[in-house]
Image (tube, rainbow, N blue to C red; front, side):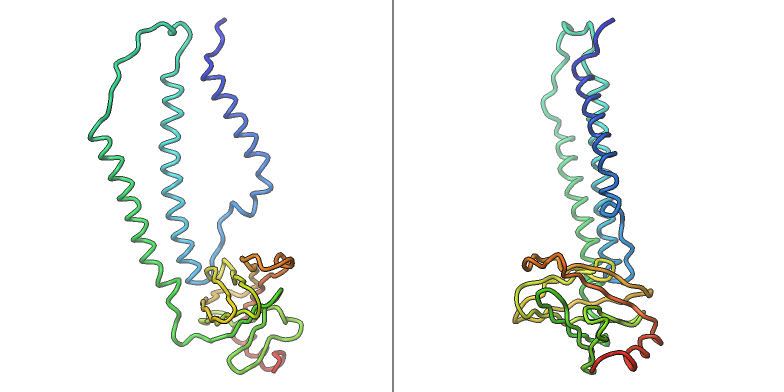
Length: 246
C-alpha cells in the first residue's frame, strides 16, 4: 500500500497540533475571547468598529487560508506522479495584480470611513453632562462630585453615578501616568500629572462595572482597579443625600 505523500502528512500533523492547541487554550480564553457588552454610547461605537474590523479580517483570513488549504490538497503530488512533466508556468496577470491592489485599498477606505463616522460618538462630550473630577494616585482613585462631595467611606475607591445620565470625567494624576479604562463604559484615556484629560459615558443600566489602570504605574499596578457603580436616579439622589461625604 503506498505511503501518503509528504505534504499530506505535514498537513495532518499541523492540523492535529492546531486542534490540540485550541482545545488546551479554551479555558484560558473563556473571558478574553468573548465580546464585551457595552452599556454606554461611546463604548457601543467602539464595539461596532471593532466588530466591523474583526468581521472583515476574519473573512479575508478564511478566504485566503481556505484557498491555500484547498490548493495544497487539490494539487498535491500523488503517488505515481513523481515523474510527470512540469505543467505550463504562468508569469504574472495584470488583471489579477490590479484587482488584489484595488480591493484591499477599497476595504481600508471603507473601514476608515466607518471609523470616522463613529468617532464623534466616542469623543464628543455632551455639554450638559455631570462633571466629576478624578484624581489618580498610586494605587487608587479619588472622585469629587460637582457639589464637592465624595463617595461614601465604604465606596472610597468606587465611582457611584446615576443611570441614564451623561457623565464627564476630568482626570489628572498626582504622581505618574495612569490610564482610566472601563471597557463597557468608555474608551481608555491617559491620566497624566499636571494635565487634565477627559472622557465621558452614559450607563444605560444599573450594576457594577470593573476596569483597570491600563498603564504600568509601579509595583502596585495590578491592584489599581476601577469600580463604577451605577444606581437608578432615585437611589443616586438618596445616596448623595445620606451617604456621600462632604
